[in-house]
Amino acid sequence: MSDAFDFEGRQVPIRDGDTVASALYRDGVRTFNRSHKSHRRRGLYCMTGDCPNCLINVDGTPAVRSCCTPARPGMTVKRETGRPSAEVDLLAINDYLHALMPVGFYHKAFIKPRFSWPLFEKVVRKSTGLGALPVEHAPAPKPARHLHPETLVIGAGVAGLAAAAAAAGRGDSVVLCDEHAVGEKVAPGPARGRIEALSAEVCADERVQVFERAVAIGVYEGGLVPIVAPDELLQVHPGRIIVATGAVEAHAVFDGSDVPGVFLARGAARLAGVHGIAPGKRAVVLATTREGIDHLETLRDSGVEIVAALVPTDLAARVPDGVEVLAGATLVRVRGRKQVRSVQVQTASSGERRISCDTVVAALGMSPRDGLLRMGAELAPVGAGEVIDPGCSLEEAEESGARAGRGEAGADAAAPATVLPDVPKRGYVCLCEDVRTEDLEKAFEEGFRSSQILKRYTTATMGPCQGAMCGHLLAAFVQKRTGSAVQGARTTPRPPARTVTLEHLAGAAHELVEKRGALHERHLEMGAKLARSGAWFRPYNYGDWKAEYRAGRRWGSF
Ligand code: FES
Image (tube, rainbow, N blue to C red; front, side):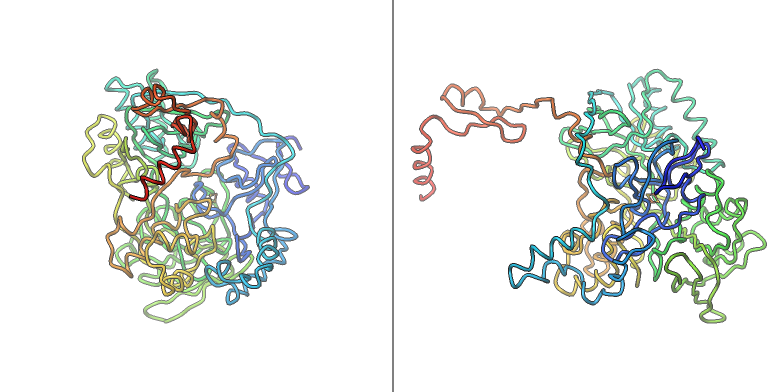
């Protein structure tokens, strides 16, 4: 079989447009990795690169987002989490031992006697993690280059493309980047059609350079934006930055919401509409948005039977015929360990009820991907589209992008959205670090009451998704309990916004950056011996360091 890759010793066929994740899912793989602490099974969830569920080893590189990685013949793919394997994991017993591993237990357990910690630490290190670092071969050097466009647009959805077109229209040189290929994650429909039309316009404009599969990882001092492209590191020094990274569907948190078979709606629609794969046979849909209900047809076209739709009363009329509508019902829990087996729902008329299904699709609103928007200090980025107005219409996104591109965006465009989601009662808030709502409650009771220290103590938001899934939920939790302002409840966003390999970070290591203070020449005149401190050259001493030390101590004692 030529168009296939090796997956743990067997050949997995590849079809046109497949990612590693879609090819594996079509081939029957449902468990993609095991969770960090409890070793629970994790399966495809967002399909947009925002969660930790599909991380897998590809060609020796651990923790690769398989839903964003194009499948290529001959590649070698394997799961690395789970002992002895992801399918049969003896450490899944951890899931039953929560009482012994409360939040922050590694700060408290095995502290005494002192010799026990180094032993225990080895066990912890072996049983967690996302895979083994490849240390046998030196990493291939990645070339790096500098770009100085007048406008950098991050994100090539409708808003980003409109922004790039408008910026080029006013004569700017533009760099446009997206972590995916343009339009690839959008199911056929009006949005895909608009993206294709705008993309054709932008690509035909010689003032615009388009970089696909190129990930902007942060906004650094002076507005420097490093972009990790497939074969190089781009160091972009733009005149202005437009962030159009969109929004991710709000993380669904309820009892059992992390069981394989639970999908965010855009993820399920991508699997069905882009890759032609039915996410399951029988699905229950939980939707509070029109878009979520619009995905029902896409799912049905792929062969999924929609057995029930849990929707608010005002959206009940939009549910297509042939689907049982449970207006105002709530989903209590998902049952199943290896795969969803059924859901328990609470209805106003008939109380609790069990529905047999193998898939749950959740569309509970949008959560902006605003990490980059919140990073800029000296060169504050401007937002466009869903990143500042989650859930906006196609027309609104395009208009917002065009305004930003023309430089007409108002003050709102520099501020992230401020609406926080409801705080869940049960379930895994942070999928990366296995943090449940109960863990947040316990940490809060212990006195960790601001987002910043709650984050450090529980490690919520500190995993590979960097808070894309859980950041808003953590903020909502703190805001509800403390009554603090929304922005004060959010944690500080820091680079990298997406996971990045060390070889990419080292891409520009050969470049010597030297920064000099205003007194540099004066220091030299006085015989200073300079040494590096980061990028800065600073005086360490002026010859007689002992005399300087003594003088400093004397001054210090005054
Ligand atoms: S399923 Fe790939 S990142 Fe979420």
